[in-house]
Image (cartoon, rainbow over all chains, first blue to last red; front, side):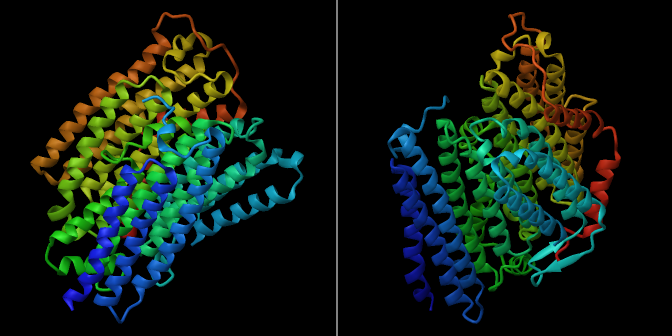
Length: 103
Length: 480
């Protein structure tokens, strides 16, 4: 049983780490958004795994996952809209181009 | 559900009026929203609250939640007044209705954050509070800085939600299959401390810390505050931060209260010291007023968190009082900043040189706001700092005395940079850059509310008593 849950949990944690790594190193906003999606999906996966293996007679983790997916979609929609606006005004989606404010 | 229903009702009225009136009839939107909102605030405050729980206990309303919502409403109302001039300028007037709708929806989300007793409802509230703010930050469609600020805000917001969700997923592993605050608390206190729980707690702390811009999760603050329209910056710095602070307190005390000293006391201890100190040190070298207020608000968030450090009823009451005082002081400062920016376009600290010669009333209001933020008696900021310090030292532990000592030293450091603004306005001998102008009616009203709040909130002890009694009456800290 313990081995079983690890088979699912370890990929999920690796996915989270990939997301964090991608978010920090990628220079393109779309790629950063993809990395963020990876992190969010890893969290959703965690909920589903814990629900399935630890509390198989309850449903709260699954329901939470459904809501979290919907919320992630909303977040992506807003972020994409903002990226399109940036592309219109500077013609690029590279994150290095967006540091015009002084430090 | 009364406060939420009222806010949704106002949202629908504003939305319908915005959609179905001709474009030249939009003039009445600002007064309509402000008046409706004022009436709603009074209604929420006056109607006696009953202990009610809805959705199977997911949502709980009581006197303390009601008091928190009223504090947020005061901030949002002053923001409406401050924004009314900017929202009627040529670039944004076409989207006037959207501004009010988005703000009302974020308020609805914050209400849910405060009243949620189940993590699903809390996450929904948190997201509906933070996503519309990204749209608000990007509101100046023709200004590049607005977009840059918005992308920085949305990226950090999604990143922090991802971290928070991951933390919650590990908390869920301990919860016995339920995401109710009370069930999780019972399970955690029954089990023994484990490394994984600490890990999960650190993730939850980081996720909410991003929203509150606690150090080391504060890096987005300065750029977002600078690029966003000033009215939105004001809203972001007080109302959004206040709601996050309340939610932080409720979650950490209700869910993790049993493992307070074993798990998150020292985490929060380190974060508070870093937040207050680093916020102060960076604020000193800012020349742009909005960036300056950003770092000042980072440091103020550290003081607010002292209330969570106390983790008892007095801590919550003094935190509510601190945020109310912070609302009037910070919005007072922002009212002056946005008035001057609307008229002249200046936001640098050097542009304020000799302000008292041309605009003495604005200079007085700004001075009072700075004195209150710095905590100079007899203004309200002094009393809010005293109360929050006292609440922390209630337990007589040496470590907490040290924390208060560090916070006190930082208050003295903060005096330096707040007084830099006062010096520029009153003492600097340069010729004033900003010409004399008359502030509009709504701006004057906002400034008067803020000034009266700064002067009288501390002296009128009824306000603090009201918070203490509302917290006492609502058994917010007990775990059923």
